[in-house]
Amino acid sequence: MRWERSRVAFERAKRVIPGGVNSPARAFGAVGGHPIVIERGEGCRLYDIDGNSYIDYVLSWGPMILGHAHPAVVSALERAIHRGTSFGAPTELETQLAEVVCRLVPSVEKVRFVNSGTEATMSAIRLARAYTGRDKIVKFAGNYHGHVDCLLVAAGSSAATLGVPTSPGVTHAAAKDTLVLRYNDVGQLEDAFNQHGHEIAAVIVEPVAGNMGCVPADVAFLRKLRELTTAFGSLLIFDEVMTGFRVALGGAQSLLGILPDLTTLGKIIGGGLPVGAYGGRTEIMDHILPVGKVFQAGTLSGNPLAMAAGLATLQVLEQENPYPELEKRSQQLADGLLSLAARAGIPVQVQRCGSMLTLFFNSQPVRDWDTASQCDVKQFAQFFWAMLERGVYLPCSQYEAWFLSTVHSEREIDQTLEAAEAAFGQLRT
Ligand code: PLP
Image (tube, rainbow, N blue to C red; front, side, top):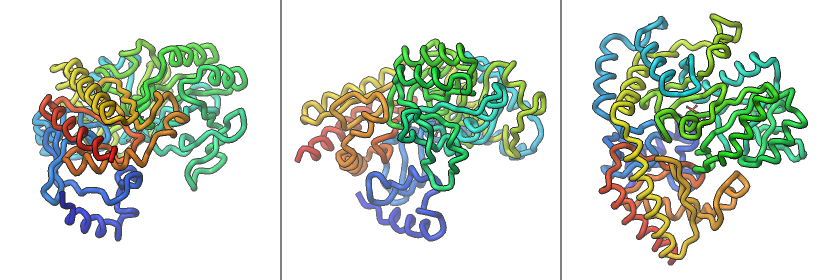
């Protein structure tokens, strides 16, 4: 496969955009080489500017559950665009989308739209702190909640796991109220609540982690989280930016039957346009301005194009209920990858929840960041390039989830497995 045009275009981008990308995950840093530059997407395929095509398992890092340029989304956008692109005033579209979200997501009675997942988690945390009158936040190592200062934090060296910044520019003051705990570790959770319970405003968690690769939480762990937050008067925030409308129409909370106090949403809710949202019980949400006193605003929040794309996407999902089919295809892919790797003698784990999955080059199941970080990332990088050469576009890091869309058919799964067989074979030699 030739990528000459991509190479030249990326060199040009690097002169005017830091690292040539507008989000670092796109830079192929973990696999080497340069990114391919995309011309267009259609269905489950991407086309690059060199004329190559790929089966896409990135799907814009999750949003494109209906595939690229789905006719219902395109025509909703066409209808909306002729009416003007932004008014900074209420529209009926935002209420329609809010009604759908409140109907579908079990714990959400009211929802506020923002412009990204990052804004959603940042705002939910501010609201939780205001509502409880407390400062401390608990997060889990290996979970990602966007680039919010107080969440760009890793566990410090002390037993109390007080947070230290993971990025220059995040102050110690911003990090000091964040406790970072091990995912799926009930004992550590109990200790943290015993020590700090009455100071904890909220616990934020990915109920199915996607940002260290796909690592579903144990149900017992999430139940304990629900129990402890309730007992200590802290809020439980499910970050469903990735899992919302992905693992089930009502998100992970509907699948697990565990209801958080606040939910953050993004990705699918915008149908490929920039949208985030946070929602929960009326009694909590009504603390936001203009009803309550918690400040949160946005010039483009509730943007009519973004609302139209999100609404069209959720309507298709609700009408067509593609989840059983997504489950079947994803299982086929997972089973196929496992048996091909076994045949090639390569130790891997395939972890999956609905249509998000990760192939881990790891000899033991991944439960938390400690086990995730033992993956053979060099082997992943080789596999990644071997797949790309064969027309399969995977996330360019071991620690990401792959996504399927409703238009990945049996044919694409077969083609992917054919490519994987050759790629695993290449790793052995
Ligand atoms: N929360 C989760 C679980 C995510 O996966 C992401 C992004 O990948 C975010 C929050 C941040 O969303 P955004 O990139 O839209 O700011």
